[in-house]
Length: 277
Ligand SMILES: C[S@@+](CC[C@H](N)C(=O)[O-])C[C@H]1O[C@@H](n2cnc3c(N)ncnc32)[C@H](O)[C@@H]1O
Image (cartoon, rainbow, N blue to C red):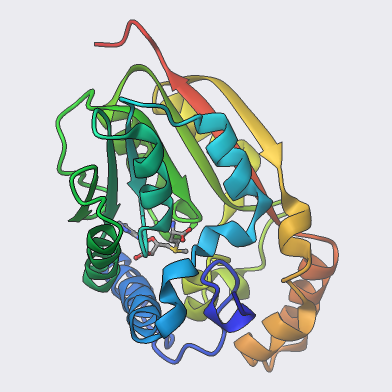
């Protein structure tokens, strides 16, 4: 996959994320639009079949290894994008299991459904257009809930994690990988919608994620650092160009943050209390 097609790096040429008031709705709409365009361009491209965006990270392989999808398992992928991960899991869980993808992008859901049909997996792989903050499933439905580079795009991360845990069976696991920060992010980066849509501006620290996962009801939370994966992609020039900043102090703060490795990446795993009701 070429860099231009990857979603989990700052997609800094997107013109859809113009600065706005930054309200939750504006940001959600901007994210939806960016990824809608990405999935549409994949649909048009002949080689779309092979593109799984998350595979650019070794964290993707680590997630599958941790998940160990087996016959009969039920797995939910939040922010399933083009559906590649769900389809890989569907092949493993077989007709006695279920692999379900949820995404709020209608274009992503349409592409994923088309692929499921092509690969004759539509009885095992289901795709639903829905918001991660309001999952259309009853409590205690899945053996595992996964997400790949998605929670960084959601403003109310605690609510997103609470929803994951709600639909998870007692004893089930949340397994996710995401962009993280290793230092406080300069406000100019936080405020920029392009960086937000590019998975950077909404990132929080590993500690914050762990705290939120515990608060959501997960225990045995473990983390694996994959920062080396993003080091190759993040560079000062890219960020400075994207922000087009005039204020020298802001530029210095950003240069310092990026150079010192402020952006990282991690896999996070937690288990829902087996006695939860
Ligand atoms: C960075 S892409 C990752 C896609 C896929 N997980 C992968 O790794 O290839 C993020 C995806 O999350 C979806 N997304 C972001 N916020 C969401 C939300 N609140 N509810 C549902 N989907 C969301 C986007 O539409 C997009 O498809």
